[in-house]
Length: 165
Image (cartoon, rainbow, N blue to C red; front, top):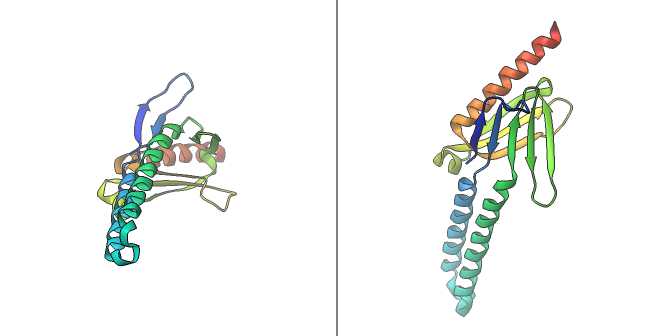
């Protein structure tokens, strides 16, 4: 799950820094591996002697995916600064997306059934002038998603009011 690691202002003026977690993604991966294992076991005759190798390969791939999600979470974060939201991600290639509060048109919160089970979700920040979702990050706790949306809405509203004056 994403964890808010700092609230308040620092020297750079950041309000909130959120670091990711990966438990929901890991649960989805392991449940998928379990489902595939069950289906393959039903077709035992097709795989014959190689059934155990096929099942072992599926679980090795599932565990590798869980490990990669654990590693990649260390290289993702959202920073809510005074005038903008910044999303940073990437291990080898770094991607930094700046979304000014006055350009943010919507903040959506989504949860699939597994995310609801773990009380986490995905937050999507959409900005004016683009056809795709600008920032999309999963694994955020329900209460933190509401807090993030509230901060963005409050800051965005304040910036829209300043521009109107």
